[in-house]
Image: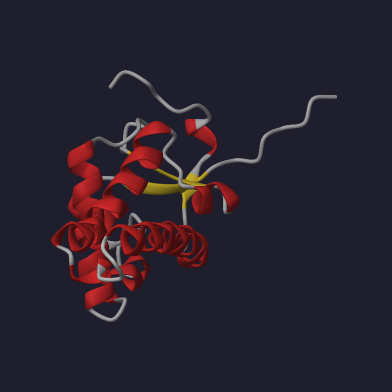
Length: 149
């Protein structure tokens, strides 16, 4: 990818609070998407959506599509936008599909170990979590946009 984000000299690594706050926002959005898919699934399967193989696959596919779209397009989900953080490569570029997949796997591992993978940023000199390390990406705080006088 040739696109590079602006303001690379003014960014710094995101802390735990901002990351978790963005995760909460995004969880609410994903929850709404899953509810919508559930309603649609129930309508087409006579109330048995959660038993259908396609519905079970959607539980894994939807987060990949959600994060993949937002992370690859702008480096930010809506929750990340609200907390002014962005995921990017160390060179300041949007991440690719492989990095998206590895970030999601890293997130599952980080939560699966009772959040230890996110607390890792207190140990790592680069303030990286397991998803950051596994995918070779970083989460940074985006500077506030300056108002025009």
